[in-house]
Length: 313
Image (tube, rainbow, N blue to C red; front, side):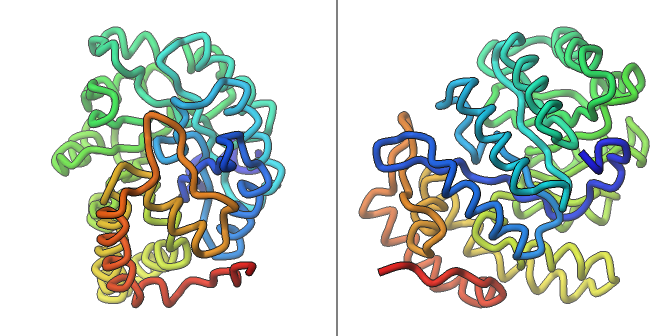
């Protein structure tokens, strides 16, 4: 929890880790530890677990807590650690957030409650309850309307930021780029904003974003981190070169539902014992695999920056 007291230091590429499962669909904490170490060795600026890429809705609360603890043990304060603790149920959200605090996470990433489609006032009360329960824990809102069927309005974000000092930022996963600007305008530019939309990661930096929580980092953590570093160094052309080189890899992630394609690639690269996903997701279909293979070949310029382990025979 080295960064908990200075959330403004949580910047750059925060890799939103997948959650590995064994072939029998049990939680594979060994592969999760291996994967986390690979991200650290690749120069990622921070890690997260429990976001959409981590399949949280297919796991029990106990499994999610076990994954949070496993990642925290490997990270060991080397980089910022954001634990995804949101759920559709308030009691689960509070239980998961308490576990993240105890595990030493630097911030809690709390998704908007999904399916119920609460009003803006209901969302304000939801986040206020979480923030008040854990006043010393930085809370990062996770707005992803494509998965939750609810969109947190910029004015509500600003209201939450004014009401609670520990509501410090937001992961915005919306293709409405105007929304990013309106959030920063409403909250003030000290508010921490990360992009969760892969192809809007670099553009957000021009508005004052603090970095990105991009699923592409699951396959190319070094490239995504380097893109941020080049931007910060003023090498804008170099950052744009990586941005465009990552296009095929980003397309690959969504050939079929994320994270199934990423897990297939990571198993092939020797980072996972199994590429299994839990229902209702399925592993990539033959047609999907053909497209994944094509895009993987097109992504070689970006992947050339990565250092993959040698797969065992």
